Length: 131
View (cartoon, rainbow, N blue to C red):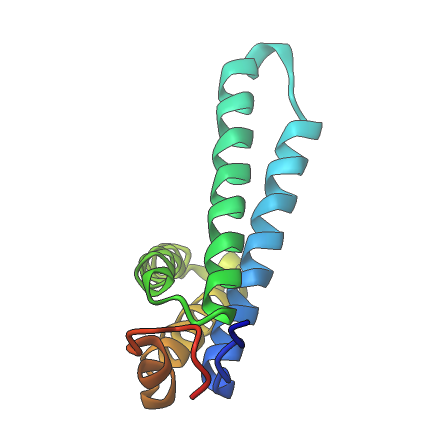
């Protein structure tokens, strides 16, 4: 029976924040579903599907990071780059706080993923062995 590798704190933080992002994304999808209207049915259904699929993908990546799966780092970094781009685009007076929160979240996750301890765990050839 193989044991789960010990996960360093920076990777735990990155995986945890990614999981929170997945929950928020699922919540947005459910809110969109609750606000479906006949006038914009196609847009509402596709937006709901997008948010729920993105939430499922981020959730799977977060779980995979907790299991030290190397492949999950790329999609999570890409998601954080999108979050940073969104933060940049929202930088205006009414949304400055949201923009700052998004920027901090993106930077924290990326920093956790590129931290030397995280890189060491994620670059192991056999992720099921205990480090």
